[in-house]
Length: 429
Ligand SMILES: [Zn+2]
Image (tube, rainbow, N blue to C red; front, side, top):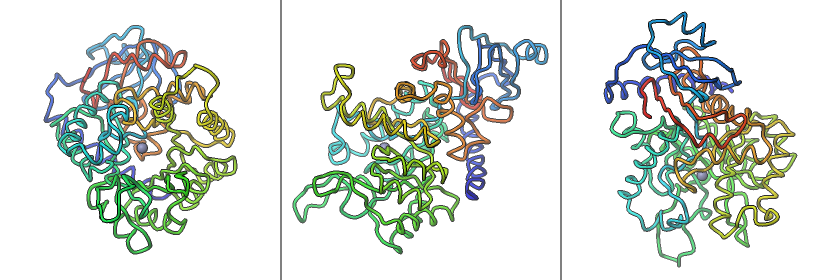
């Protein structure tokens, strides 16, 4: 896609903006640091006995440890025995302005909690996320909090608060009548969790309005639970989605689709969205279409399991319930079709800072561990236009680096044990 290149350039500029923020806000001894773990995952493959040289904010050299020690004898050395060094995790689907639904229902978060409370929680969530080794997030909707995600991103960029790099979606776009909170009597107006727009002219205007508001991606809902029996059914026509995609693309931005039905997914893929979120109802035909169109899928397994848990499901206490069976089958079909699968758990539905639950589930649902590590680093970076910014341990990229105790290719649960976090060359943890 032609717009991808422009997107990368823009993100590179964004990276420079972030860097200036960190330089102003922190003043550790800068200079060269040689990080010496047991092994590295470079964003593509595991390499035993490798080391990484960081020079100020960037990665300067990667290679076998003995070679690097010889080449950079003057560099300060940091030994990280027992660890795997890897690029900071890139979360593909977060809601930094939401917190778990067993603490407060989504309706109450949108209707009852003050915007101040929601932003205050967001500040805490951002710090917890970064401390857990997630150095970049794609935040897919403020859910009734307007452009507060844009504001939080600006605060991180200026070094006011600690947090990952952010790509934000702002209010997101939904079709009239589809989104919640709903069910109120006629005449009662409540704030919605997203911005309503329909039809050619209005969609163009709202996409442009959100771009002006500072969003990095356009998020739209291709379907929602508004069927006659409350089941998910398509919302926007394929033509409407195409209008959104083209208007966003003209500004160098990509469009992201929430879609859980096969028809919603089909319309979104045909209309040119970059990624599809959830996709529970995907058929083999739809996954083949996504593979053909290069649409990346975010299955959000951790959100599904969390919501099932809030509803009383005890995992492992018997055969899988229908929703889990469907999800596992969808994962199988997507892998067979060759769909690129990204890491994005819909965190916010579950606890911020436990993002890696999605990675564990991706393995449990059939993906190879190294493919899951790629999904959380290089694949997400490439999908979000960040190829030249983060996502790999490679010279010239920002030094967003973490160390985990053990080897996640052998046991993905070690991703919970992050012992070192570096963001643009500054040690955060
Ligand atoms: Zn979401």
